[in-house]
Image 1: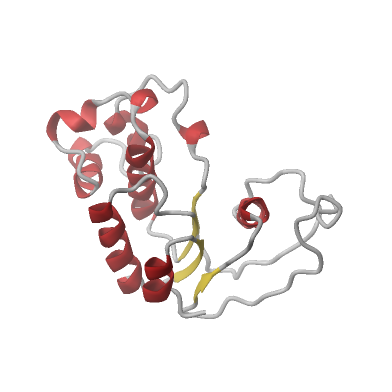
Image 2 (image 1 turned 45 degrees about the horizontal axis):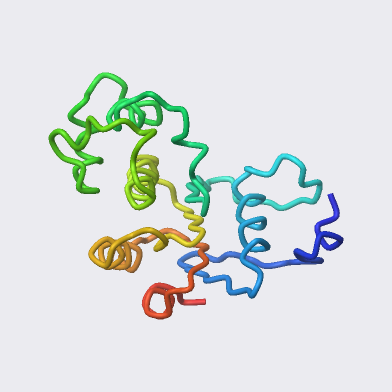
Amino acid sequence: KDLSKEGYFNNLTFTLNKGDKVVFLSKNSLALTKLFDILANEDSEYKGNYKWGVTTSLSYLPNDNRKYFEGIDLSLVDWLLQYSPVKDDPSFIRGFLGRMLFSGEEALKKASVISGGERVRCMLSRMMMSNSNILILDEPTNHLDLESITSLNNGLIKYNGELLFASHDHQFIETVANR
């Protein structure tokens, strides 16, 4: 699919090096979402090519994460369990949810009725569980409160893997990105 005809990008080339935390800035946020969808293998229509290293493992936080939650009649524990490498230990799952402020009865909420900020926190739990060495975050601070943004910011500063992200939060960009 020729994305230049759709006004996204043409002949885009870049290399991601060890330790890179790259912010992508654009007046067209749809172009960034399209790029991240392609790099995360979420866009099945893309006909171009790109190559990840052999030892890479990828986690993606899409800007629009509704498809992961809509019509899902599961508690947050059961929702996260479907992505877990450990299938028979609810305390393992609750530990990840607890880090995102879903403790006790909060972890039993239905995934289909949570707020936008709660969905982002669930997706971050899912990403932490995967222990990936490359993260792609499309507007990760959207829907989060200030305390959650600060925690995410501090976590990404300490994160040892590579990061591709888009954000409109100047402070977040200044403290996380090194490229």
